Length: 108
Image (cartoon, rainbow, N blue to C red; front, side):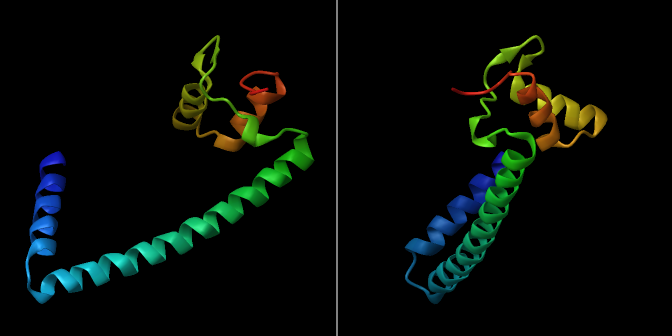
């Protein structure tokens, strides 16, 4: 919740501004976590790029041209994709491909 997050931020700020070793330990912990998350982000980006290339090859569509903000008859395209995912369990990528095949939601 918001209250819990603000309390943690305050606690961490207080710890970092104090002169005890707890601040160093906390900094080291967060630095390590940040490094691990960055490795995961890099891996996911590589996977995303590979999938995008496969989609371009298979469907002739460039996923980086997905707009998401334009409005079809159903509202914004991103909202439509989320509706299809949450209501019917549709795959996000395939939902986007279907919309883009209709010539909708494609940036020029």
